[in-house]
Image (cartoon, rainbow, N blue to C red; front, side, top):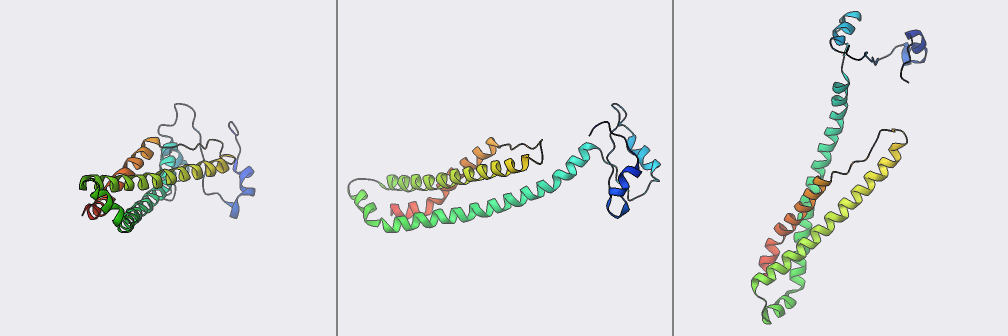
Length: 189
């Protein structure tokens, strides 16, 4: 509610323990400079007093979100390592099970480079499929969670970081290529 002015007698009966732990102050336009010193001196320069601007509060509150995002990226990194091992394992099993098929392809004229290319393409397809499925699921869950949150927070919006998602898709292609090196070399032999 903007433009509402009240005294502490209106607020304290509803506060827990008969006190309050934060007060938001809105300054008149052009009067915000130096207001923190005035507030501190008016309240006795207590070392327990913390006066912050809107930007400082935003930065402090977003710090917790940044930590959570860093943890999520750490988990994503671990998932990528597990995915690489999974793709290598899948390709190794595929090469092992298709030894006769690969031998037949070599017998009818496919060279070692063609075999490596075939395994690399299979690896890239597996990696891209996993990445597209994971990104699609993540975007859907973010949209669903955002829809549930939007009723309580009218300014909440879900933003899809398209450049970062494109980077993850490119990383999936690179992971597919790297994961195909050992199975591709084995298949070519």
